[in-house]
Length: 115
Image (cartoon, rainbow, N blue to C red):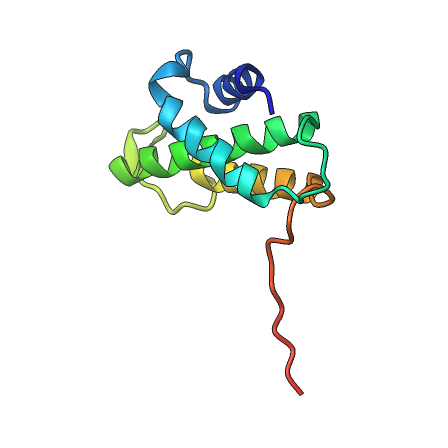
């Protein structure tokens, strides 16, 4: 994975201009993704950069939403119900990239079957 590419993608996903102050989030996402990669997978695949940036963006959105649960509307502020929040969209983006990288990473779901 290319850290500069991940930082650039994080800036695009999050809308933040300075990715350096979020370096710990990006490093956390890098380590998370590295643990998910299959042993025989190509670690230089560009899709992993997108997955890492989406994971960092999702953590960033979790932090931001934990501080502020209001949503700004035309009429003013109101409590957000969460279904159309930036956090919900960041989670959808992360799921999409997990699906896109499914052939490179370990399965993220486990189904327990009993007899």
